[in-house]
Length: 315
Image 1 (cartoon, helix red, strand yellow):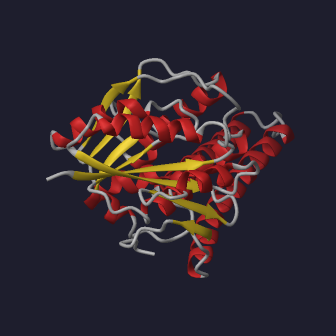
Image 2 (tube, one colour):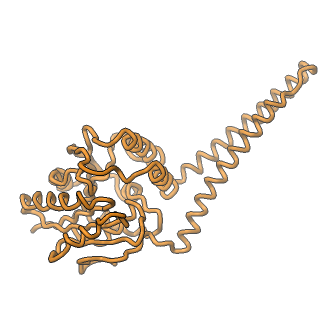
Image 3 (tube, rainbow, N blue to C red):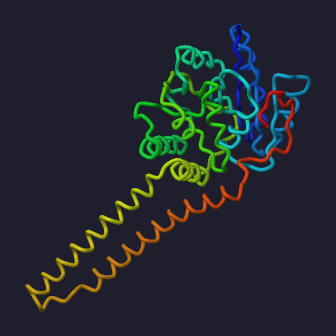
């Protein structure tokens, strides 16, 4: 019995590349008769003609679904939109720029067949810019510290996941989705497989420093309370430091009454403590704000148009 593989590709500024990625998927799957496949292309409100290209790819096809989001909701929201329109036994997510090799999807599927729930591609040498590689390292550290990711597990945007894990991920319908956090809270039966990372043929990465910071902040505020615990620990440490410094000042005054109490030291302590208090309040406010937005049923994404929507879609 053949299994169905669903390919989900979030698209942004990929009018020149997405056609080649689809062709590579089709060519690869022809050599894998054990699998049927479908492709879900999600246009994340790209300013170029990406959805026009998607419309052409969907024309006369039933195995390609095209989704056009009403505004730019981000890569993770686009992934969630795409996964909600799949019904494959395995879902494979990859990029739209051709850097993630669709012709090596068989390596991910082979690991799934070995019994793993999720398989992430690991790159021996990434062809990203220095800025993007730095962002990946920061993201790796954040997920390890805040979300409990195993130290030896490499995370990437190219991964395969079993249906039951996808169904568990799709139970999350609040705004601010973070796919890595959803995977890690569903299963720890995860592994890596080596694949090649290609150079970008055209264009540049859609991630700016602002988007990367927003993604990191979303990751640890949506799926971890460790920042609040860190804030509590820092508050305790600064309170203890202030108390000990106060005792030191009193003892010093008794031992040498002629030594003036330093005004600059006092101001430095006030500024430091005031800054820490504002930082902690801002962090708490961020959590409360996200709770408020979730209670107001803010949408995870909004679909403007859907082409060739699968009959078994959850939508």
